[in-house]
Image 1 (cartoon, rainbow, N blue to C red):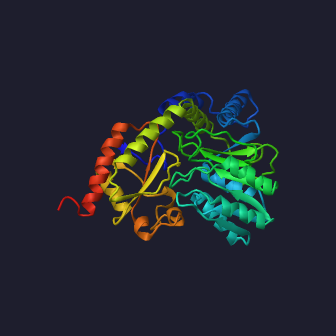
Image 2 (spheres, rainbow, N blue to C red):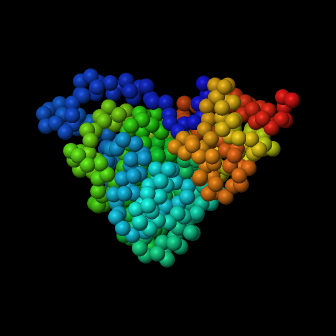
Image 3 (spheres, rainbow, N blue to C red):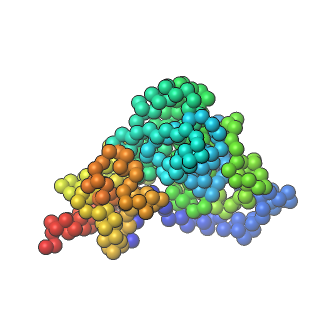
Amino acid sequence: MIYFDNAATTKPLSTAILSSNELNDKLYFNPSALYREGISAKAVIKDCKEKILSFLKTEDHEVVFTSCGSESDNQAVFCAKKRGIFVTDLGEHSAIYQSFSELKNRGLSVHFVELNQDGSVNTDNLYDFIKNNPDVSFVSIVHVNNETGAINDINSIAKNIKAINKNIVFHSDGVQAFGKIPFRLDKNIDLYSISAHKINGLKGTGALIKRKGLNLFPLIFGGGQENGLRSGTENVFGINVFRLAAENRYKNLRESLDKITEIRNYIKDNIDKSIFDIISGETSSPYIFTVSAKGVRGETVMHLLEEKNIIVGNGSACSSKQKHSRVIKACGYSENVLDGVIRISFSPENTIEEAIIFTKELNETVKTLKGIIGK
């Protein structure tokens, strides 16, 4: 199988799972227990937190482990500020977009900033709105757009927002950036969401990176785990696999980035430009490459490739029931382009040989659908 839908999820790292098996066999104890074995389990979690912060090169933040990136996003949105104007952009993952829609349903003031054509946030519109609205209290801007790969310079954005209003809480969904692109988490970023299964960890594990001293309320109440910020017995096994998967990603970060760029560039250079429009921008993350096969349905292309044992997506897996991608539509594309959207996303396990086979099959599949060949 050629698997090019890694933005949806990745294959768990087998060595990380094997290395963590001892936690299930010999250190399965509750991390909140006060006896020796429970304290040892708690120490594993502490070590994992320190490692994750070291990958982000920050001493200004702390880690709150959660069940996933969506939970981390929800806690940021609902638990950092209770009033004021909440601002985000039209290109956010559903975990942010739907949370903001719920804020609006609850009677709070919400504003969505426009996108540039590549899916990045229109920073001029963002800064102008904040300057003209002193009641803005919370801003969330995605780090890497999960449908186009557009990279927002969130360190710069956070700094500029704080210069306008230092009391604004700034959050970023970093799920498609963590473990993929070089980045240092700046102290101006108050909250940052990450997820394990996007970088070869396990589903059911995520984290919210929180600036020290920030007043944050829990989303889940109970036994007061995670310093009272996220109740529920910690998933020590999943957390340790997350740490090991992240460690593997960061150890090979530059090498993997170069490899993925080569794969993306091969596909970009060799797809038939007469039948494809390229949606991802020149400076987008190479891990996500989105195109449109104009005149055919992207979902049809996806299923025909599946019959050839090739897996791609046609947008965010979390929005798969929608006719068109909300994000691509917000970039300003026509319905003809929206119909044919195909999202191709990579991991370090992919190869240039896979890219060569995939590009040939993609070109031929769409040409057949359009009646160019196979008559």
